[in-house]
Image (tube, rainbow, N blue to C red; front, side, top):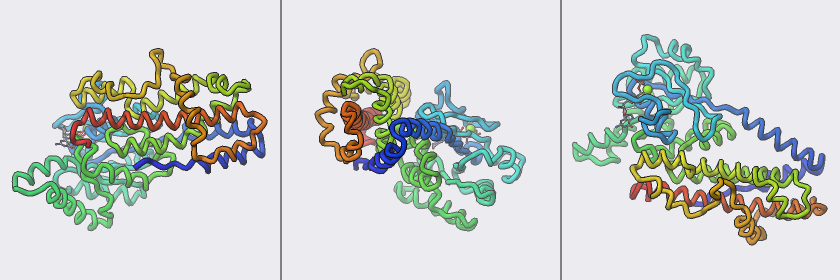
Length: 393
Ligand SMILES: Nc1nc2c(ncn2[C@@H]2O[C@H](COP(=O)(O)OP(=O)(O)OP(=O)(O)O)[C@@H](O)[C@H]2O)c(=O)[nH]1
Ligand SMILES: [Mg+2]
């Protein structure tokens, strides 16, 4: 389903600012709100027993393989000895903290949480594997006592499914058995079983990964949740759609910014003089959708498909060979479509009748960015299907 975004509220809000303070007020509001957003940091603690797959999870969610030079170290023996930060390559405000395994420390869950400075994290992801253990239980209890938010991931569900298949049982039966083990144990501690998600870090987009994303949405304030989604590698249709929804919310601000400081009386020139703003934005979208060179390379390593094969799936060419937005072509297309935009922006712009050039360029830039997002989202999905093969259909 297409993500629906209503930008009317944003437009109305900017209108009220304009009415009170004119363009300077709009400009300073946009700059301040951008700065506020940039200040919002999200720190996610990944904890649980040694060997549960914490480091593997961080690599999977960043879209890199375990042998990537920037990967968290993964091994069958005890590996992570001190809290180690992994900043998202897509969105630097988000940091995943790889914490040492709890089961092997000599500390109680409470001492462990104080030693890792539990206050510095926005929420905890407790990773558990195999049978539900005492250390899983005490960790969950202590985190709850400290009034911190958390979810539970039961990892390596692929292994349970294989074991059940050996007993002629189905995937659903394996999932049900694991779920009920976690549920019984958590309910004894007064923790809702709806906070448990069965996932394989070797195949991150399958099983209950999407359900986990929905749960995280409920735990975080809106801006932090948006940061979280923008930090993820695009490895599922749900992530692509969620990103499109967030990025569409930025369009009004970017279009306003791109037209704001241009006093040039020709609409086309007005948009052109902001080529830098628009190119930077377009490059950000490429990275977000995993269509930039580094992301394609990482996906190629993960999938075994060569980069050229993946690149062939990108049918929309928005950036030219110099890495600049192909603005003339795009504006021509967008201009044709601008009149069909259903945002009701015409009423908003009746306030700016004295600057028709700015009005027109705003409408064109909005249409162009919207089209660009839809096209890149479609390309991103085609690339992912090509990389992952039939399992992504
Ligand atoms: N089959 C399967 N194996 C996994 C999964 N996640 C991790 N593993 C394997 O489990 C082993 C331990 O993974 P790590 O990510 O190093 O575990 P950890 O929790 O970081 O361990 P410590 O750093 O010692 O605390 C590695 O051999 C991983 O390849 C999974 O979802 N499925
Ligand atoms: Mg580790």
